Image 1 (cartoon, rainbow, N blue to C red):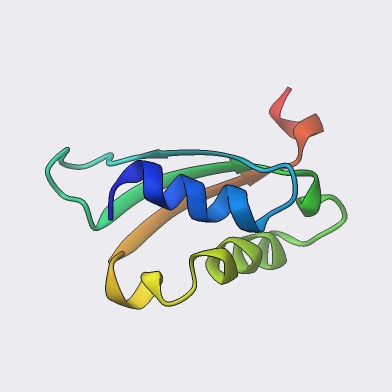
Image 2: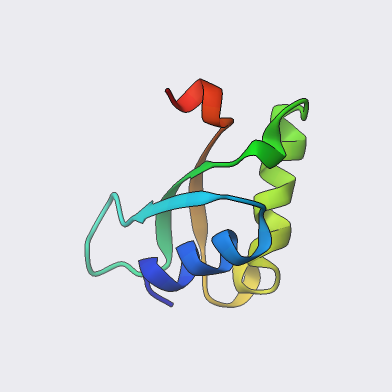
Length: 80
């Protein structure tokens, strides 16, 4: 699974989400990602709930295709 596929899964699931995905450690390591997601769906949600929304969007890929994610979640206001 590559960065574009991870971003696409998140953006398809979360309303008006913008996801940026990179491989921060080693460009050839396609199982560790840094994920930054901006979405109005995070408004009023705790950090734990925001992260859970992203985990839900990635579903079974978190156990099969992705070993670890460094996750940053922001509302559009926080991203400005």
